[in-house]
Image (cartoon, rainbow, N blue to C red; front, side):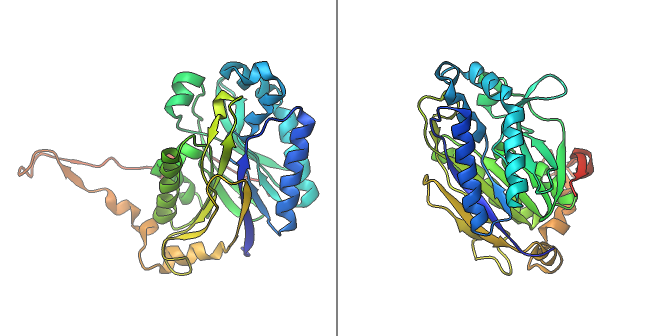
Length: 316
């Protein structure tokens, strides 16, 4: 696999009057990143929800905004697909609500390749807001997706705070994990960022974070947006001492660019100063439940990483 440039968006949620205005905005963003040589472009979690602004009544109501954006789903996907083909880039579109095969509404991020093919990842673990207030359900499968820049995994926002999701992706051969996020305060941003950096350390791979930014008081689902895009790796070898290849200026709309070398993942995992990816199974040791009584022990449950992997569908 050859080196390539990734672009992660710090994407502003704006009041747009029409679907055409949204198309024009996305086109400008994709064009700018492509002109800078990016081959993998990444938009953040729930970025598609700004489309609810074209109907003020829908935007102001949580449930109505969901259904408004869901109704535009095919048009949203088609526009990303056209842009990926036109600019010959791979695009992770901003995630959006979508009804799955169970009839449940999930938070789905769809990835588009330059040959027109696509695949998706549904968010697995819902936040309290999503499950208790908004009515969003968790997805059923973890995907490993083959793209022109290598095999990627997607861990949507809160999912990055759970190690087994990323571990399943890494076990399936993923060398880059994409973390589209939307956080309404700085504590939320840091939770996702710390999780993303931990996943890069544990799995000795690249993790790329994108974030929504700006205030949108007209849209209750995304009224406050705080964060920054970043590209992380394990602090080893070619990486900076803190493992941060690049990080954006907090809360400012921008593309963040970094050049990634997928071959480095093999070097990290085979020749690293430490080898957490290889040594993961060594965690499974007995745990004493009664201090001082060697007979009263339990063992950490075996982790069948493969069981987490719902499907691995090559795109190319």
